[in-house]
Length: 262
Image (cartoon, rainbow, N blue to C red; front, side, top):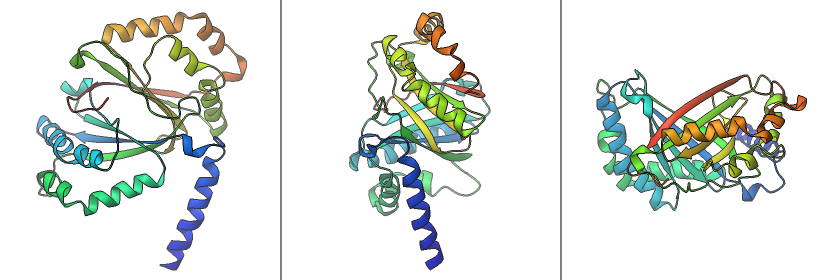
């Protein structure tokens, strides 16, 4: 037991020290959790949505967490692996563990989610769940609320993951977003970003992730065409110092559920 405690102290100290390399002002930048629920059929999708709507999201709201995004993959209608995404912003890294502890002791939450949490082993309400932890970029230290005007069912939220071959190439891509001017370009072109973040716990590291949003699919198409044709992007993407800093890109197109805050 003592060895475990000592290991945790050492790990925590190293982790905090590593984070300090990103910015001298840790307190101003949020941490994000992206929870991904995987379902194998429509029944599991329905069970996950009911659990989120009736139990998890109300509990997070009671704990003072705001701007929580809940989305489903647009491809769910035909996909074998159907996905539901929950985006949760936290003020500090320890808040993530605190919320987990609160949920374990929250009788209201436990009762509201009883069908999901206590499902029989041969009637699982989902295939699997995963969590990704991110640390906000310097130039967007807190998550944003998109300024969209289109009908909610038509809205498109685009979650992107950029992987790099090495840690230094990954840091170079993060710098390209911040000091290089990529975030400023997204802002100028009205991409309605929800967040930009460095992945600090995840299965595809080293990588960064960010989310932009659009009134509809045509708006998304138009925005990206404007982006790739923009002289500033052409100049930025051709700079030798930014060459080969992304080795793989995953793009997830999402739509908000009716009880999403975002």
